[in-house]
Amino acid sequence: MVEHLSRDLHVGQKLRGTVTDVGEHAAYVSVGAERLARLPRRKMSLDADPGDIRKYVKKGQEIDVWVDRLGNNRISLTMVKELLNRDHRDISEFFKVPTSQWMDGVIMSAESNGPGVFVEVQPPSGGAPQDGLISKTEVKGFPKPGDNVRVRISMLDTARDRMFLTMLE
Image 1 (spheres, rainbow, N blue to C red):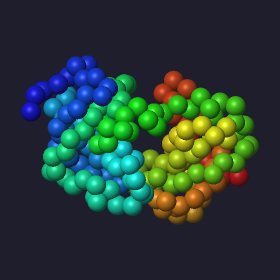
Image 2 (cartoon, helix red, strand yellow):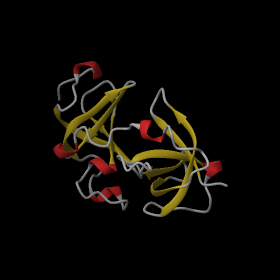
Image 3 (cartoon, helix red, strand yellow):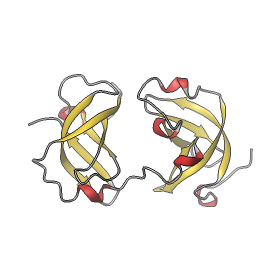
Image 4 (spheres, one colour):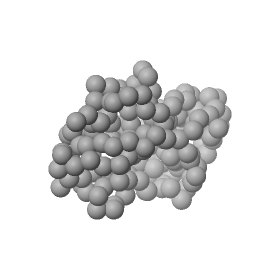
């Protein structure tokens, strides 16, 4: 495999990689870059569901991927060319949502040893769904991937386009 520096990669570039690790909501792939690339479950299939990620990839498997996003010293991949440049994190539609407003969301991952629970939320304006993190201290009950939940915004990190949510009153 050709060694690539992240700065030599470009969005849309097709690569052959090897799955090195499989988590609950993403796999990590060696594509010959200086760091592993992240392959989110929702970028593994057009009909990706919140079920077991291992039905799409397994550790040690060689796969074809496309570079979907580069930035902040990170590489994000997709296995489906049609998903290129779709679902990029853009929290701008949430800027006008008051922290008191409840929104519907779907649990995308809930790793017991992770930072918390990742939830996909659609902005009230009807724009593209975005993911947000509910820290462990802000989670109510024991949600599982695929569960529907009600959440509110606790903080927006505009510098990194990250949304933090709460399930608490």
